[in-house]
Image (cartoon, rainbow, N blue to C red; front, side, top):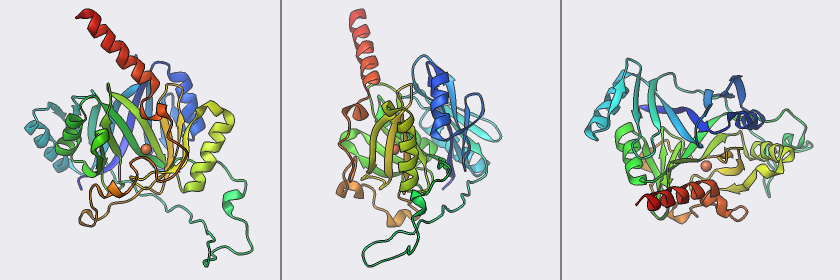
Length: 312
Ligand SMILES: [Fe+2]
């Protein structure tokens, strides 16, 4: 697959300073003001000022100039303008206004996470020792940006741009939510496009070593400020990943996640096999209503509708 990694994102927020403090606490390293690195992925997050919270830009790694050429041809076929340089291609996704950049760069090689020894009925893997998960240790750090979820007022157009134009593959779909789980290349989803009243960033997700790392990191964030808690701990039905969602000060959800499905052989994977799985969670606390329809976005959409009606 020509696309080999979700490289980085730029988010816009009205008040960057508290958002930057949140992501420092979250475990990302702020190497320059507003620029954050994950443990394995290098610089993966930029926080900039914007009139309202949204995803401004998304960058994807590709292997070589041929990959740029293929995407340029497909975008031209869709009549979407793109700017090409020797090592990059940029285009604006028409339904959300997100600036999408394909950039030639190295693939990401991650060191294997240490495997915890679990005991289970009939299968003892740890004897005469406490689990490392309960011992005091430095806080676990997000290993890489796992995925982003984008609300789009025209989810079909956004899906067409990312799948037909850019080259994402479809892993699963939930037609009732206008949701498409897209990957580049083998993680079940690096990008989820779903219907929304206006363009907005629903959440970013950050890969942790395992479920204990998810639980410990989220517990530390909530211990420092309980109002950060949104939804978790649970395991998603689509993608199979553990999740715990927090809310950043701008209102965007930030997810610690682990154990996402990997699709290494497209022939062996059935798209929409997730019809057997619950679209939201296999288990976990009840989903908060605000998670499905964030109140600030609903209020902005209502305001825009009222403004349109008063002009009419
Ligand atoms: Fe997620």
